Length: 631
Ligand code: ADP
Ligand code: MG
Image (cartoon, rainbow, N blue to C red; front, top):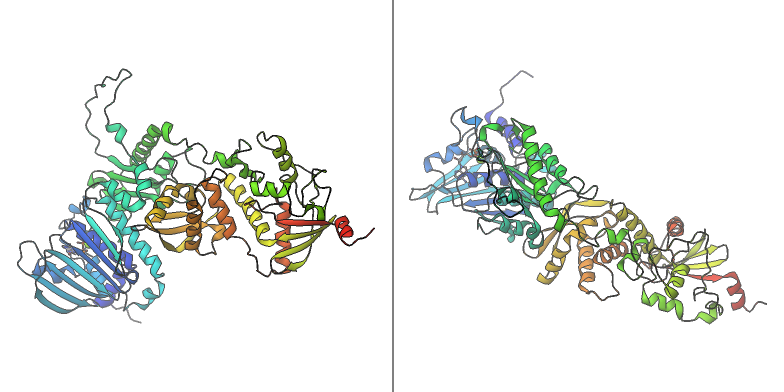
């Protein structure tokens, strides 16, 4: 093929691909334009994750009628005239590419009335070609509507993710910009439903409430506040501050106390001169600031604004403008790390010590407490103790059980390796604990399944009837607790996220436990009034309905706290393990049964499920003989 210059249309389509990768990138560009236009209100209306339609309306300065058409040409911008200006970009846009790119791959209608003009103009474009133009009455500002994005780029269309993913990315962009511009009133609507809005009050904390929920927003610590506060000496005298030239680089924003943490770095949000950026280095500076304060594998939540001289940061690195280059990256790293570190250290003595958080689950301190569950000990469950002391039909099975100090159901003691008892349980309780909790199971042979719910096995001294659901719950529970102790609960991100809508009461309850849920592998973010988005769940429940799991946990938490009940974490863990477990009524293959039994044999406390019900019933060979009237 001979070398040819690409047609204008083809060149535009190719160029468009770099700027407008997906619906969310169109939303980002249009929101940036609205901000650059000085808008105080920005309404974003999305249909089907932006594939069907995107509409952004602002009350900014508008586009003069005679410039509207030019705005859609490639490299057309009102924000840059000389190459010197390129050295110090003060606006979010400057490349003059977005409108051209968007119109090249969609059908666009723009209605705009510029400041000082008496009527507005409406321009329609189809694949970049002007298809209509007329004068209209319109309020000052600009409304851009995009329909059928990528209609003429089937390859791009094919690679778009699900509607939910696109929605999530749009939400992400909009919430980030809302944080950077708290004086702008944002409203984001998906398919007719408001999913996010801010008041435009100018208070970043108000926006943070909308983004993270009241509970977390309340905890966030203002970065740099202690540096700005007057310094006093021991007697409370104000120390004379040296008159120094204020640093041209300032670091502000909010950092979460170490008690709030997340499974990944996505909750570290960075802005440079009002532009949301992604920067591995600065992100690492924030992570470093929390060094030793967070559990291993957990990351902080922070919103950091770096404000610095425009000419010391190059924003012209990539068409999407989310990467920047700092003239002095080391300095930015150091300043960010220091500012965040000071903020959390100043707060740490009061806040980061949260008694009974991790430690309660890993270092049990006594018999009566919540802590017993750390090693799966179930001796504190009254109903189970009751059952042990007054079993329903003890005499039928083993009339001597009680005298022998054995369990009423005739469980023999396989005391090959009794587990150490933590804490100082006393009296009868100790006896129970010794009998029940410490005893591992013998190696068993699977015989079969009854009623799709029970597994029959044979051990050296008789037969076991095993409740498959209870047994699996026990296995899951011990695995989960071990992972929790190592602080390595595997968490599974949900590609699309899952929305959950709650009553206001439930929402409050959920919010007060987001940190506990976070520790256990749930990443749940506020998503509109009383609505939440589940981003990840513990890996064990990855195949379950995430909304169901979360609703069940909330139902458990709602059940209130009677003194015999466990801590929040334990409730959540139990629910997760229950959900992740094989159900009664589920037919199992021999292999599945064998695998379950092998895992149960490994358990420290195989005799009960985490809720204290028995996992098995044992019939010794001698009991069987008695039952059959053998001599
Ligand atoms: P850039 O933002 O890089 O200048 P765009 O293609 O995004 O390039 O926009 C082209 C021009 O159209 C802008 O420079 C601006 O003058 C005008 N414009 C775009 N959107 C708006 C808006 N919402 N309000 C006012 N003017 C706008
Ligand atoms: Mg722009």
